[in-house]
Structure formats: structure tokens, C-alpha cells
Image (cartoon, rainbow, N blue to C red; front, side):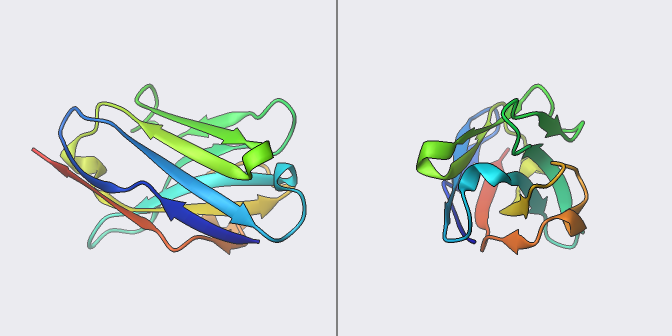
Length: 125
């Protein structure tokens, strides 16, 4: 499956952005757990949020974004979203979407076999 992330940009602290990740190819999109990860300059890649492939679409969030970010999916559009509210300068990073066929929707990046190219999010203070 190929993943194309978009929606990044420059926003002031306290602002909002919505990232999108469109999937193509592979099997049915609904069979993939989807995750968002981010990598800030000089730092390791870290988990942000994930949503499971099951009908219940179980969500999982990093503690640093819980209550501010919301992950959702539209299986009909083969797209996963990350709504980011109350953005802070420490949220500045390249954001990557990832897919895991029948995955657990975990925070472990090695669960995900497919990765998008990343989209830059910059939050100014």
C-alpha cells in the first residue's frame, strides 16, 4: 500500500491543523491499522496516535497529545486523519503516517510495514 500524507504547514501556537493520509493499492483500507508518528530535528521518531483496523476503530494516543489530537479514518475514502488542536512549538516535527495490515494499532513503529513520505508541521511561538 502507498501512503501520501498532506496538510502540514506553519501555524501559531494555539492553532490547529488537520493532517490527511491517503492510501492506495494493497488490500482493503479497512484491514490496515493506521498510525501517525513524528520526528523533530535531532530527535528520534516518536509515536503520536493510532487507530485500529477493527470495526470499533480503537484509538491509541501518546500522552503528550492526548486531549489535543484526534485520529480518525474514513474507510470509504481510504484516508486517515489527524486533527491537531492547541498546537505548541514542541509539536514541530515531520509527521509520518504508517500502515500495518491487521495490526494492533500499537505505538511500536516496527509494527508498521508501510510509511508515507512525511509532512512538515511547524508551530511558531
